[in-house]
Amino acid sequence: MAEVTLQQVTKTYDQEIRAVRNIDLTIADGEFVVLVGPSGCGKSTTLRMIAGIEDVTSGSICIGNNNVTNLPARKRNIAMVFQDYALYPHMSVAQNLAFGLERRREYGSSCKSLLSGAYRKQKLVENADIRNRVQEATELLGLTNELERKPKALSGGQRQRVALGRAIVRDPQVFLLDEPLSNLDAKLRRTMRIELRALHKRLGVTMIHVTHDQEEAMTLGDKLAVMDNGIIRQFDTPANIYDRPADRFVASFVGVPEMNFIEGEIRGSQFVSTDVTIKIPAERLPTTDAKNVVLGIRPEDITVTSGNSATVNNFERHGDHTDLFLTIGETQLSAREHGASTQSECVDFDINTNNVHFFECGENGSRL
Ligand code: ADP
Image 1 (spheres, helix red, strand yellow):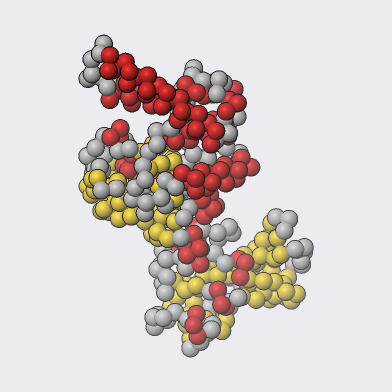
Image 2 (spheres, protein in one colour; image 1 turned 90 degrees about the vertical axis):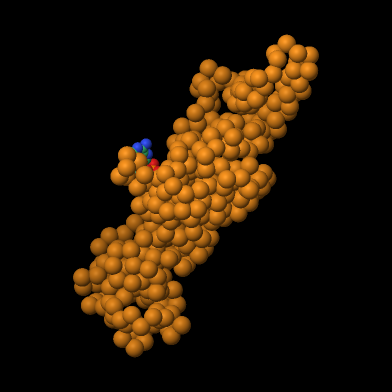
């Protein structure tokens, strides 16, 4: 187990694409951290640099007390799990699990005399150790009945477990997981999320997981690094990311439907826009004296009642709740209704002013 530290890490491809820009990140020993963000924001590049399968252009990476920036992947004591599992199709589950270990050992002992008695004795001990490790991993992952099967005879979930098992047998200091659940259907993804959390708890090892799926990130991570265009916009717990997003990018990336944004002005204790005027509790007013602001409000903090100040344009039923898409003058808002939906064409709406957010104006304005 080990802490992972990135200092001012930058990756430039072809001297122009800055995939990752001056990232600082400290992942505590034993923490489960998720790198999340839209496609192309630099998540995989960051993970691959930690793994050592991509060079850094500048900056440094430490695992534990070792500066590994210039070490090859095999010397970093990490294990990586990929989206496409990367299993050997002609090998059984047991062989897939043991193969990486055997190859590493062979590499390690390639300088020794293959004929020496000491070498043969050491080999026997190593083989027993490999068998034990494979057995432990298969028990942990519920794969004991699958040991002799080939990958093609396994379900998607089982294949992903084998890929995890291959990482576990190596007993690495850090697990790196690159979109490992993306090829699974929605139901299995949820099951595997629970299994991954449980596995992390049992192993207590540092895990770094990449996904573009905000729900997966929120449910898996002790902490999330929300990335955008090569930078980390916020590194925080899921609760803080949701309740205190650092800027508009983070606020809109997390939560479905996304947070509503309304441009307007602070006038005394009121927020005033073209279509909406709301009294804001003193403790919720922006702490700066900014006048022009963007108000952010999540759909679940807007409730509808009977009335006719807003038009219902559309709705999506989810069983336990309905998302309503409203128009008030020129302003579009999404609101959430619990239980049976109104089915009215016009409604009134209430904003829970205790949960409003304020941001600077502009595309990715910071939290005020
Ligand atoms: P993500 O994992 O967030 O989808 P990536 O880290 O794969 O994003 O990519 C970040 C940026 O770097 C993208 O613009 C991508 O096109 C670019 N990129 C990634 N790998 C290469 C490469 N080998 N050569 C050139 N550009 C690359």
